Length: 216
Length: 242
Ligand SMILES: Nc1ncnc2c1ncn2[C@@H]1O[C@H](COP(=O)(O)OP(=O)(O)OP(=O)(O)O)[C@@H](O)[C@H]1O
Ligand SMILES: [Mg+2]
Image (tube, rainbow over all chains, first blue to last red; front, side):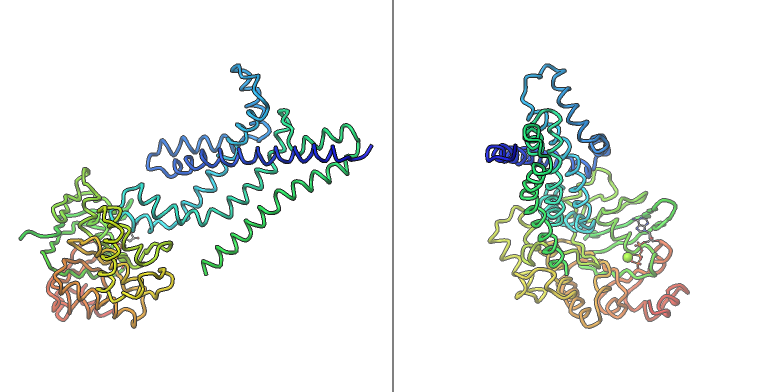
């Protein structure tokens, strides 16, 4: 048996699910990650420690294990009839929130302290200092590493297959189970990943270049 | 009239290092006080305490009626009355010159955009930079950036201006243009404290010179004091150039 258009279509749909799951992970992870990044530089030590604890636990757990925990954990609390994308989505959102939080905390902290101080001396509130002075500068620094991490998210969605979610990698595996042409099939799968990831890394690189030029 | 600034027996340590060891002085309305002293003598720390960027360990600081040593101090109210300019300008690099100046009046005083823009233009005219309103800070020379920083403070119409070695990062040529702006301010009756290494400027503009040594006000007097130092330490300080 060989690869037919039907197989290709099946893999392509897997690719769309990969994009969808990546989008969920990125959007959800951004919202929670942003709040966590702010919490990490909060004036309150308790808030800082809580955020740091969450990030450490998530970063210290393999994504595979996080996904299993959500899959079986949701079943334990009686939500076992939920589609696989829910467990996969939750797991990936939690995973990306922790990493994005750390990336963004670094960006926020790389804005010189003197900028905070200058804004403080102009009688701006803490919120105004953050939104009008610090964030706009941190966002410029954050763009390139954030897009870079987006590529990681896309690739890591392949782990969602362990909870039965049929994304790109799992679609390839299923096709291979029927035609037993692993090399051909996974070359095609790899090509799909490349088509999704390449524009992102190219974008990230060009952003980085632009930023460096602006610095000079 | 009562003093704009008064420090009374102020102590401040960083860990085991005693930086201010009983500092007292006053600044009257319209007075220009120059603070001089060797590196590490606590000049910057004293300025930062006056603006509540550092909290004092003991002693009292009153600035424009605000009790700065009081833990219940309303910092934002204090900062509306006090402008500060640093050696490193600290302009906001993502904003144009005009936006740098308009930020605080629009955020803090709820001024409208158009009114704030007019205000920005008028303070820029005062520092001689009207044509730079729409440039970004990185497009300006050091001296121009420092004048923008002064204009940004002036836009808040402070009752007191603090300057911490604002010309130390500039070459002599650019120093003059910044000093001229400060002199104009002094003539206009602004109360100010300036930490400076420019002895000639201190002698000319200051109504009072404070020589700090080892965390204390060691010697104080009118500008002429620099020509006739009373203490051995000031004599040595003046003799060694800086
Ligand atoms: N945040 C801080 N933490 C620890 N030590 C500090 C801090 N700020 C200042 N110091 C120390 O306090 C002392 C006085 O510093 P300060 O900056 O007030 O001196 P200065 O008179 O302004 O000197 P310079 O002319 O070099 O600016 C120095 O020994 C400095 O190392
Ligand atoms: Mg200093």
